[in-house]
Image 1 (tube, rainbow, N blue to C red):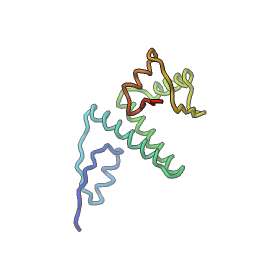
Image 2: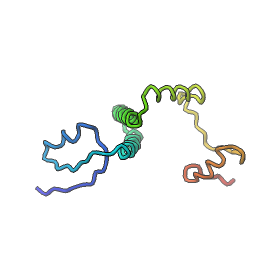
Image 3: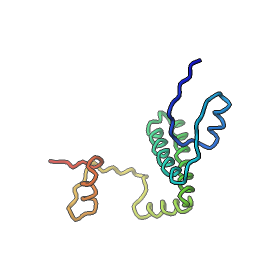
Image 4: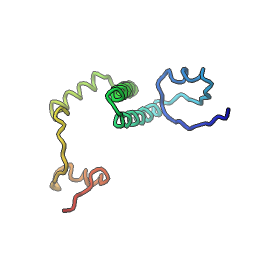
Length: 133
């Protein structure tokens, strides 16, 4: 049987390598440095978020949300941040700015040059394109 090798180049859950090895799968893996762990966990967070975005039903969404939460826990642990600290900041932000219960949506906004986000929007035109009316 002809085999093919693929570049995976991504962080996986701790037991995945051991689960794949008995299946005659050839794996080349390595231990990551702390810096590499942080980078690859951030990539994993983006990957899992994209999978949650693309989920087709509630079962898939719940599965991806669980993966996101696992990655958030790992990223916090690798960053020497407790989940209690993360939760405290989350609650403080909710108190100050609100949560997403109402899901307010801003279609466009007009800033004056003295507003902080005026320059922020100009510096990020791909994310916040200027509307010329």
